[in-house]
Image 1 (cartoon, rainbow, N blue to C red):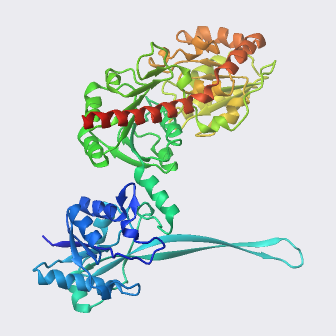
Image 2 (cartoon, rainbow, N blue to C red):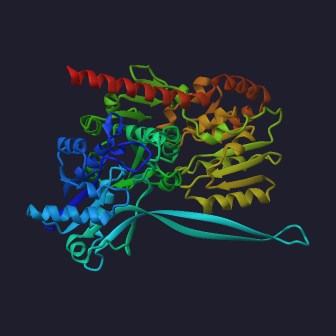
Image 3 (cartoon, rainbow, N blue to C red):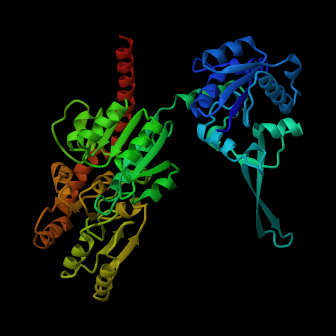
Length: 549
């Protein structure tokens, strides 16, 4: 097997603005510690530190690495990297240590990842004898020519330029360097932004401390025709308030509907096919916190998470596994509260788009109704409702039908809508839209599924007729408990016309409006975030006390 060497360049006095930067404390550890730690995680190379500092030698040895004495003549600001590396390789040779390839870095890169180190070694070949690391930038410049006669803009030209910044990070073939006595720079690797931080002053060290202190959250979430996309939007809403953490979202390959939406939010995303693959992801990522928005959890799954030492937070979980969770939020259910289990609409997490606009204003006469059955509408309730409405002459009301990303009955539905339009109905269709707040707030009431959409409507003071699309939704009691609309659980064809007429009555909607204004649904998200952060802090404190006993 080819022998690999990682050489860390760490002299005592650096030319950076901070004196003895390599020894500067970051979260109570010297800056040097972090690159040593990351290189040790690579496990496929010997690690040596080239230094002239006795303190750096001591620290290097303490953390399980080796050092090479660097002569004073190679510690000046204008000393070339090649000279330092060449000297180190020759000293190792005198000890009988010969290496095939070498990776060179300094403590200025405390965020450098094991995966990136591997790329510097793996891209060396018979044709590529040395590699330099670079940081990629893209500059967009807009040039505008203005006509002197017309005094207006007559041409807009956009020029894209790509520039790079070279870093003193290299890998190379050792025999090639010793023979050619140079480090070529004709092949490079783009270093991920997550591996870089510019340590130029004391403020940047403060930023580094915050980055290194970030907790890691692993998020398990599913989306499918049966489950819908409510779980996806719920978890994204929560994660947008936790950007200070490192976040990895994990989805099952057969339940990954809505994954494009996760990518739009720029979260890291992995897929798995079975429990063995998930366990590998869990062990590799080693999260501090795990979020589950996958409906009911099993005891075996929860034991796996707890055995890994994670703080576990579950959403909408009535399964047997919820007893092992550190926190459970069931906003859509009402039940007996117990320790760390939170029920009811006070813990609903409404999407950000419903926070931008003022709430709905009550009108005496109904002029606009929204029909929305979530991202998938698996039982095609949208069609069923329109089929019933076709029997009644509601020509003066505008109906807006909202179809989600997973709706699969378009052909049948549009045939019915075309028939209704010919009969004089006013119907608009909105397809695959994320931004529904304005549609909702302009409606006098909504006809909807009995999932998380009812909270979004409530946040805008819009009453609704809720119709469960599955047995699970029939257990959701928010609408009936708070008396802010009507819920139809059975006999849709018989019940809907009666309920619809009741909702047209101004006095009924006025009463619903009064009760909706008291709910303050938008406060739920902040409440959930505060509970999570406070509970996790207490959890860490308790764990520390146990370990110290």
